[in-house]
Amino acid sequence: MNRPMPRLAGGLLLSLAAVQLSGCAAAALVPLMAGGTLTGKVVSNKAKDDGSAKPVAPVVIVGKGTSAVPAPSISAPSPEIAATTVPATPAGASAPGLAERAAELPASASVPVSGVAPLDAPPSNVMDNASGFAAMTAFVLSATDGGRPAAGRKSALLDQPSLVSLPKTKTCADQRGALVIDLDPGDKAFDLNDPPSPAPGLGDMLRTIRGTGTAVVWIATLPDSSAKRISTILKATGLDPLGIDPILLLRGTETRKQQILLRADSDWCVLAIAGDRKADFDEVFDYLRNPDGPVAIALEQYIGNGWFLVPPPIK
Image (cartoon, rainbow, N blue to C red; front, side, top):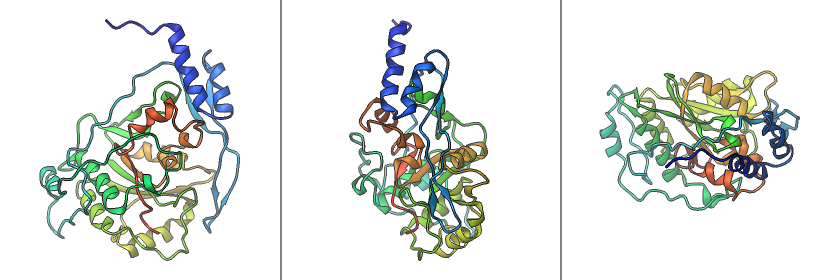
């Protein structure tokens, strides 16, 4: 029989969340229990045109609200994860159906997720080019069927207020689906002057994803004025040969990648995010005091299930 959560248990849940968030984020949970708002510690990376970062002090809103909501699960991709590339769709041919596209990914063992990785996952926790990007592709293809949105789509972006209870992702409206790919290597801004070398096979995978009507959106912590140079690099590497992909960069007074992700959420249903560190999925990973604590464990369910740790797409 289901029983309502005792007041003491609700307080304990918030207390557990409090010990997982560092600095003033944890201290803010005390007034939050009385209806206050949780704010996190400050961080920054204001980028210049040359890609360098300058620390600033914006306020990070981690979340608000006190209700304990069960964490939903995102449907796992139907195709098995493959350690190969996805063949390109021939020019002039219509995009194949989901079944045909899934068949192009040879069966192999699913990539296991065991334990909780450190905040900035070491190389052993980042999939190699083939398996990481193939897993990402299989997941996105499973969320579309002939270009039509799958029923009950969930966004890969976190519902920020849920971070004070049990983390969950947002529910998508009827926006166009999108795959977001982070260009920044580690916690540094993408280097516009470094000779680009694309991840092998990624261009073909992205062509298949675009064939479903899904947008491929590139993000980086560079100023908006760098968009033309990034577009040129994406064309030259074959990752966006037609120059049709949206590029989201820092605008105006923006200083954080999270602000870019929030803008992406307003325009698309973000089906998946690919990055080389967990903070590329949500900046909450930069505030966890204990990477093995309950909040980190609750977030771990999304690794490989909307969040994909992969090498930089261009390096």
